Amino acid sequence: MKSSQKLGLIISGITSVFISTAVVTSTCIPKAQAIPKKQAENLVVNGVFAADPLVSPYDRTRNNPFISGWFNSTAADVATTIFLENYTVDNAENYSLSVRLAPRYDDNGPIFTYISQKLKTIPGRQYELSYYLANADDDPNKNVFQTYVGGKLIDEKVNVGFQGFTKYTYYFVAKSRTTELKFDSKQRSYWYNLDNVSVVPVNKLSKNEISKPEPCASSIPAAKLVFTTFDVPNAIATDAQSINDQGDISGYFRDSTGDRGFLKQGSSFTTFDYPNALLTYANGINNQGNVVGSYYQNTVYHAFLKQGNSFSNIDVPGLDPAFAQYFSNQSARDINNQGNIVGFFRDNTGTHGFLKKGNNYSSFDNPNTTYQYTIANGLANPALS
View 1 (cartoon, rainbow, N blue to C red):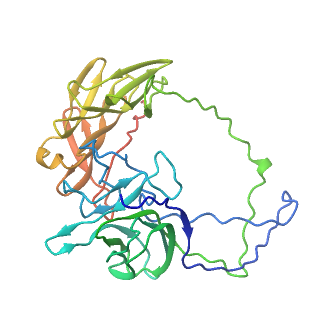
View 2 (view 1 turned 135 degrees about the vertical axis):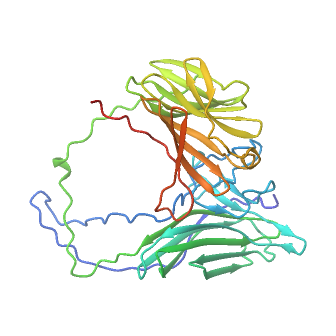
View 3 (view 1 turned 90 degrees about the vertical axis):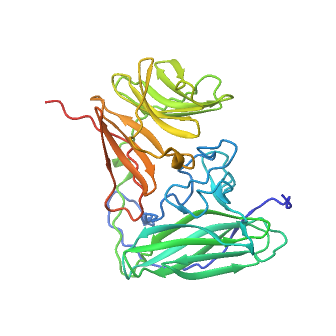
């Protein structure tokens, strides 16, 4: 890395300021006070890039190019140039990632690579787009960063110098029910980092709008919660995934040998690996103590069922192993008390949910999704008759 400068935080961009009057009538609020608006929901799926692990699911020596919710133009390539990185706006060390958009070439020199996502929008509605962008290039040489909304180029940054995370804000009006958001970049020697992408509807208060008061804090009883923390002994990291009615907890942990499954019963831990697997991830558990998850073996991810000390493979039938070498292609995510299992699998058309009942498998997709990405994470227990 050429640059040894520390990337800082800079805030800039387009801002809009307005003043409104709030009328408050409530006997339990002793004096006039501002009523905070409910924050608008971000239309961008995984806009903070924290939904995935940092390490590539098929090569532990590389950072992860698979970014949930986003299409990565280089994800399927062995020498991928777009991947997740633990360099972020908030400088968090764990579970906070950004996307690195690094150089890529063909015979004619640097070429564009991109990430994109299709958003559900309302035609005629105004939206605010914001993101943070950093650049490691302290000797600008034909670097380009482009922002597209709905197929239209709304901003192009050329020969950006070295900068820490800088906030950029734009406004656009949706033309259809689906609007593509796309970030396109080209670098010669260095890279961009993108983080905290947000698209929210713009709802400005009019001067005569009346805001309803919030309930008195004293009238809402505080929830009495007890938090218990735990770690698998000697683990570098512990990730609890599921709990049954008896309080048994399943999950996975990382130690010096890799990622492994665990079962916590009371204060006792049982650790396990699928036989001959490089990595083992335990996900769901039912009241019988049966555990489902995934394991990594021979460059392919598989689904498993653990009953007592016995393991069985429960792969979705017909998946192409060649395709699975480049994608975390399947995982069992949960099991109910009847032994039914749900999870997801990937094929050349996208990511799909599956349900396993006995020996029968059925697949399904969310009909309302704007991109082919459906993951089943939980399964209910039918009511007793």
